Image (cartoon, rainbow, N blue to C red; front, side, top):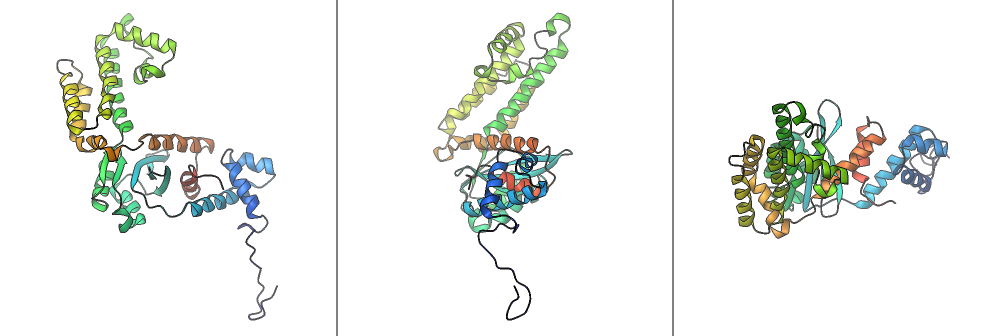
Length: 325
């Protein structure tokens, strides 16, 4: 209809309509809910809609989810990076570990400058309220946090620490395989994940293979026992006790000729403050959220066979832990 004042044609804005005026918000939210369990292609086929229409409606739904969740003001954050495509192309994901939701996705790489973009987005006032930042031992993340939120304690995620220990164990396995010859190799071949897995997670056949392997190779047996015992480090409630345990664990490496373990112990010593921070009661936060979020992101990427639209990927990640509308 024509406007009485300016004469131009105007369209009345109706609150129940979606951004695409051919559909209601209720229908857009239905499409968004379906896309949480299925691919865009499957939803488009199910509802007889164009692929691009389904994607646009889902993005509107996810934007509404973020609007309802409100502006974050975290006290404890988890920081990690994800690869969005081949060629070492990374983006940083920051999560609120108290509320259990990702709050920021961005940066151009894993650099200190990219990490600084998060703190700029968060603002100086909210950055000053951070009390704990959980991250891996990547130096740029630590430096950016110390610059923008110096009051925040830094805690190194134990999953990343134990991953380094697993890599050290696998290096020992490879060296043992290269050192041996003939029939002596048969116990080691194909047992990488048997060694790296926790014993309680192994099948009956896996436990038998592990028992045979450890009985056949003394050095791998020692390396495996040291790997399993290291997890006790996170059970202490006082830093002094944790340090005593680590020193005893490190001393047990003497005369064992486990060079990868010695390098791992030296790395732990260099980053001790960020590991010992977990001993303080106020820092006893759930460290499994970041690892669980990474698995969820990999499922999102795998379901979509790779996401080229970065804005869409950002919305998928930021809303993956939010309740449905």
